[in-house]
Length: 483
Image 1 (cartoon, helix red, strand yellow):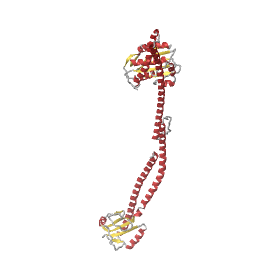
Image 2: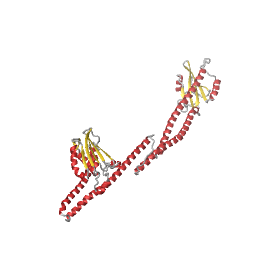
Image 3: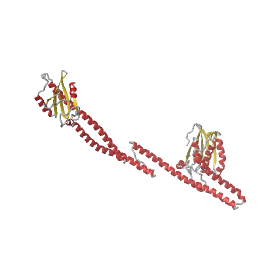
Image 4: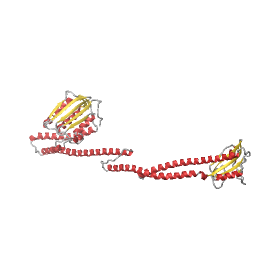
């Protein structure tokens, strides 16, 4: 069964159940009230007639038969009937040849002054009906004088007359039930349609997302839980869209990396293969052999470096390396770094400048710190020609801060957003000439810095160079949780 019909049925069941409960209570109350009022009225008549029988001017406590006959005529207008018994339990009015008498058990209670109420003499086992045709609701009132029973009056009204009020209540209940069903059905339809429509929109949106459409947006007014669900759905879709875009960008960078890696590997492999063939067929002059062997060594190292960078990145990213952190002087590391990079800087006609005090204390893994700074300087050399690369370091509160600034080609905002992503190359065109980097250096830098609990910031503008700032905190002052 569809939700729309389930909701309508649920609303209607609630309405019907409520009406039945309220109606049953109302009918029960009306029944009690109707019989209570009837008992009070009948007892009032019985007591009033008893006062006439017990009047001082009536020492024998007998009522005139003609008076009773006339009284019966008057009472019949209200559909009331009466019978009178003497203190011997014999019916004295109306006169009859039948030996009518009340049950001994009831008569004994009447002698003790108790008034008897009978709801339906056809259903009450204590008394046989005074009529074989109609059921009566009646009371039996004793008349007592000086503590002794002088007579008893039975006065009754047809049950159907008493229950007219109950019948009216039942009719009113049926009318209310039908009216409530109609009105409740309309309200249920409106509410069910309102709720079902929202859920249908959610269902439709979910199907679109399942089919790969992440541009779905559900309108909502924040009025109920379904609107909350729609808002959360929109948040989820936005997150999925961003994730999907990132996956596509990552896949594109991966494809680019594979192309670059294949290109970079093909060049040294082609060189090595050509030289080996030259050695095999003795096509290389004797004086050129040392240079050829040196070239083969260089190209082999290039391949090993490319493979090692990938393996190193995977280990760092999956936290499979152990950092041995300690305090040491970073200036010594940076000084050695400049010596190692001097030849590369000369080849690019770049000037390497170290700008830091003689001692900058840092808390880090010495080898990994060296790897971080080497990668940052190599990156600066990669994109700077005929320029300057300034390496600086200093102490700040609870941390050591290092900066690598260059005057190279710089980056735009989009490039800065992805610069630390794996396989990303800020200048893909360099791959075509075989001088492009692998796209892993800065990813490795970011992973290592995070594992140290530090942070790295980048600032750059196209044509105005780039500046990378690394902050490594002292022991106990880590900013980042290991990722």
